[in-house]
Image (cartoon, rainbow, N blue to C red; front, side):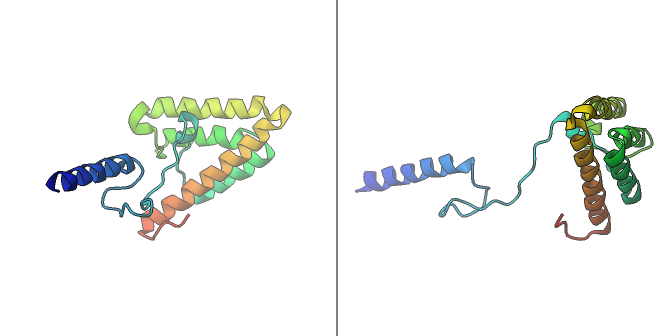
Length: 145
């Protein structure tokens, strides 16, 4: 009987180990676990988008909408002027600047087949979203964006 209980407990531990990769520590295991936080994994170009002041992000979105890549090109220079980016700590300011210039060139060169134009608009929208979420962070308000 004691062996059965020990065997049952070991089986329970194995179940916890299998669910451990899906469930967060401290979350209930029954019912599949609870998701506490979801983070989007970004590629190097997406992670290089700088967090700018809201008005400047809107101007870059406007420019990207009508002249693909221009707003992205201008945003590259904001990195040199102190704008933050997720990649600066890993790769440095100079590399993030050149990644943004490369993104602008990709947008300009592929605008002829509409891919760059659509990419440019989404890039501008991401700049505005980053500016809004940064504004909420600075004010200490909850982030629902």
